[in-house]
Image 1: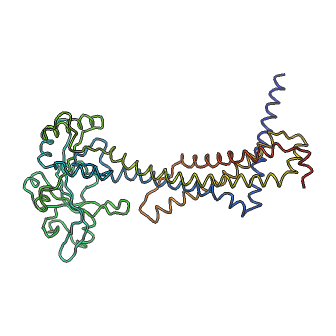
Image 2: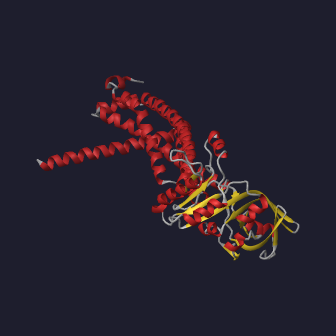
Image 3: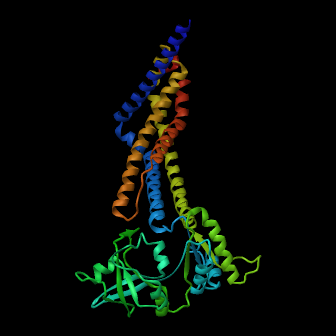
Length: 426
């Protein structure tokens, strides 16, 4: 008895496997037999899936790139500034302009009093500076006024191939010394050793004491067009009416919250803020910057998914129409199958699998096109891309689901056909 039941189960499983394979074969042969109709049928699914795959790849690539190259503060570093580095609305921006400036005195206070800080550095930036050596000049150089402790925090990105960085004594004396990026070496000092030479920054001289390694570009902008000088020297050149930034290193990510609390207490005490008053300064971490970027990228992704969803729905409707046409064309076939013992479930399964197969083939082409599109964008633009396995699986799954959903009505219509009426059909 047990062996008979086992045999019946194996027979049913074999029948199901054969029915599934036959349905897939019929769907593939139908697509091949009507090539132009197949292309038009799959177009909506292909466009929808390829758009999602391409956008996910580009967004993920950009997220990784931004985390590693743009906002690479480190998980244990915080930034104290007058206001957010990326204002989210005009009202907040205007409010921050009324706040007190962050000054070098604030930096010295934090450096001397912050016991949780493993390091404290100060920074001031001046964009679009003209650098000149002899008759050669370069515009749009980013001038960084730093302290040696700031360099220590970001030293991995600003390693030197020759020379040295500034010292604390040179900061105290506001010395006219500088380290330069690789763009200046290539454009101003071709064939010349820049160490010891006099570089002019908007007309002010500085002695080159260090040469940075080549960093390349980030999202189309060069990372090598920079000059680093003591922050006191920069303020001597351009004045002290601008707010600076202060970087504080906690030493390890677990100590970051305690370090932030102490920095906040020191700053509130220096500004004599009442207990209930809001902070009149901003403290940000790498997580803060990445969350802002994530909000921007997720919004872009949501819009693309919405557009792709419309394309998938249109593609699903087209598949449903084609399956209805297929049911009408194969009415006699359906009647013949029913007359020799095919059940409603067999007919239903056949047409559902055909519909899902058509959509899955469109999804496969969509994945290939999306990957190719993402790579092409990365080749011709500075936007990086990263192909995600889960997005490929999700794209194929969504496409197949669309085929199943929109195939229900044609499949149920085929399953309900009366075999006698179907056999009379011309």
